[in-house]
Length: 212
Length: 311
Image 1 (cartoon, chains in turn cyan, orange):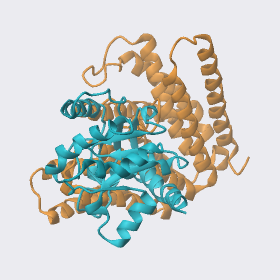
Image 2 (cartoon, helix red, strand yellow):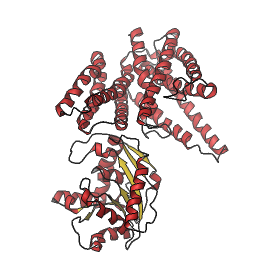
Image 3 (cartoon, one colour):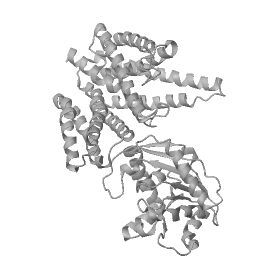
Image 4 (cartoon, helix red, strand yellow):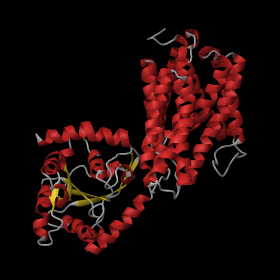
């Protein structure tokens, strides 16, 4: 039932909106991991980011693609919570929880174990930069934890114009989606942080749409 | 009439498809002979042509309403692509939204065949309204640039391109291909002009016309292309349009010159922004603006030439 809802939502609403109303300048689609355990590490500007990344997958695979999202944002109201969990299939992450890293990762790791592809925004939220560094290292620790996962970097540009934070009006623009080569193995979390930043900058060079 | 399409239009469409079939087989042949070389771009280009021609012909065959919707959708894709590569301010999201709304309205005038409104709606009403909408937001920093950018985008991609659709409202005898004939004549010669200028330039090009904008544009390509297109335009004119052979010569000059400038104007925009293509919608070609650049200029200019002489 949930899988049916997900396919209907993406097939009838998200994919048409992303492909016709928006339009993607998609590069290196072939570098996307087709099966897990894998992590897509993307930059974050808009709620549309998740929708666009998921729409890159065929409907038959879409139930394997799971965005990791902030519990304190998406689980606030019963409706939002039901929709996020059952239709989108998010893995809720307790951002405020400063305690046990292991407990934080439990659900992510079990998803990776069954071959899911996780979408993670290493920047953290769209607008709370103080969360950034913590989450960034989080991706590294998750990928090198109990279940080894590959990390594929993706940058997107233009979605901040389509639907910026706090706006309700969706305005059509083409958006760049540039997929990068799978990241190499980094020794430490801080090496990883620097490496990701550098890769992002290189991928942004390939964007066509305006940065402003 | 064959499949409800006037015979001369049907013949032209069949010839186009025959050329495409030939190109497809030729590409297969080239691929198999030089199998160590990479012909991805050529193959993608031909595949994209199949999509373009296929959708266009189906729309034209399906009738006037379907064709108007089709060209309206092309305007939408072109406007979206333009506004995506050009910088706009975040406060202008609303104005951009209104510029999209201008598309259904402009094409509604075409559907109603309201000639006066079709001509003035964007140059007068949209032109006056957009800055009003911006004033209401109240952000004055960058106002001039923003107003100019959005109006220009709307003019090029909605107003200019919508002239193709208005051709369908002009009565044209079935012996001359019907209204479809006028559209085919414009589209075919505009694209043929691109190809001819490219081929003449590749073969004989020496003297560059505007090296700063487009290093591949040469006088040899321009003149050779023009002569080929003028001759084809004259020969095709009595077949597809109410124009005579001699009027067709003039139409050929107009399409060739306007097509050249449409191409270099869009090239200048891309140069200014530091990008090579404006999108990736048509693999092998780039974006939709990369394919329709010449058409933005040829459509209104050819339309008014024809309208002045015959309607």
